[in-house]
Length: 249
Ligand SMILES: [Zn+2]
Image 1 (tube, rainbow, N blue to C red):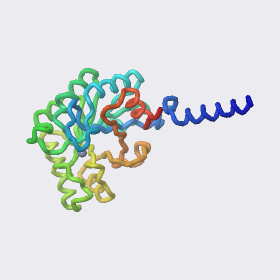
Image 2: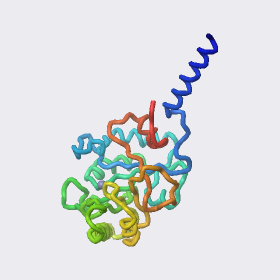
Image 3: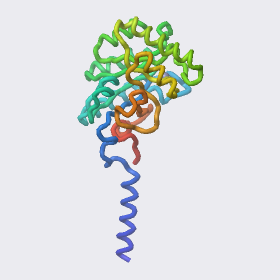
Image 4: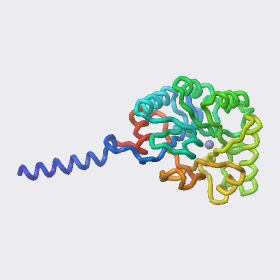
């Protein structure tokens, strides 16, 4: 009877350890964690996708926890070209104005860099204006990357329009900032081999995709995986997600 009880307890313990990830080693080893976010605001900016708006205090708590854990924050291009094993990359898509109002002060407080993938919707007050973009760029903490002119899903518009969207946005950003833009994110992850080829030909060196699996940097510089950090997570959950790729308990 007693050996049976011990065996049952052992099975339960192994099952529990397999279900929980808190004891897992950092995952994936030797590969920077590229994190994907959008808006930073207490109010949900896009009701159709509330997970795309992280609260400022949630983001700041995650940054503090990662710093405490010995992680090093890098820009997208720095980590893609010279990856370190404890690198974390904060990326923010779409260029919401709250990236200037809410995100930039947090980055300044902690001295950590981030990367914003920005469209050319400068005259829409929901998005970053030219002056806000210039100030973010001049802060030395924000890398600006491309995200097409008006957030078109590149795989659904035909190759000629896709090419024009990629190139016009790059030219817009470079004329606002006065220096080359080298990183890009495909809106809604819409990419295929032709789109990747157009992105490379436009002069981009690295691109963020929505591929499922994390692969070592260098495997495909135009399809770099990112981990989504949704709204409403407790800090230990988002920390697990950022450093292990998943969390369970
Ligand atoms: Zn987007």
